[in-house]
Length: 113
Length: 109
Image 1 (cartoon, rainbow over the protein chains, first blue to last red):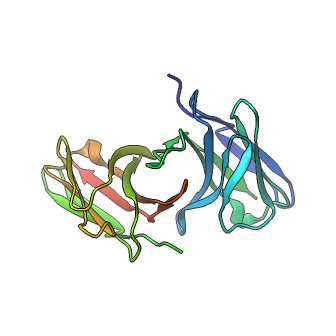
Image 2: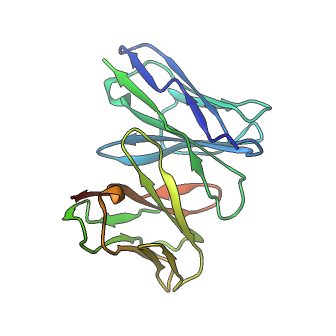
């Protein structure tokens, strides 16, 4: 069974630009969560989608948005990029059960110059 | 807001040593998960503990969930260089995970 796939693996953008990251979950998984990982803050929850609906949202500004498609693939978008948005963005998929076991992709490393 | 504190933040040891890392919270979680993350990769699930007082063993790794389901520990026996990585604990709430900042473990030959 294929794992969680994130594209692209690396991105370099400049301040003010926008970026879209993609995540393909494990087949059969309907829940997709996004996290931002930085050395100072660790893994911080961005949002979770389940069956195309945003079910939970973390404490991030509105510049961070996402969506999920009918095939469970998800995208996240960051507009008006800031230097502080440089981070590893991780996507995780799960069946959505009560144990909430999540399987992570390798991440997209975003550098904002 | 549920917070998970991990300690120590960084640990550098020699091959063959034993170590314990801790994960503490003031909140109760329905379950707690431990992940290991290697450079350039996403976290990989090691174990999930659900019941207070539960102990799980995974080869040289022993995981314990506190009786009150607020804390957990990970003990590694005879550490090997392949154990090097970032160890993350995560508490499970309703469809979300709250992560600690992790313990970076470096095992030198």
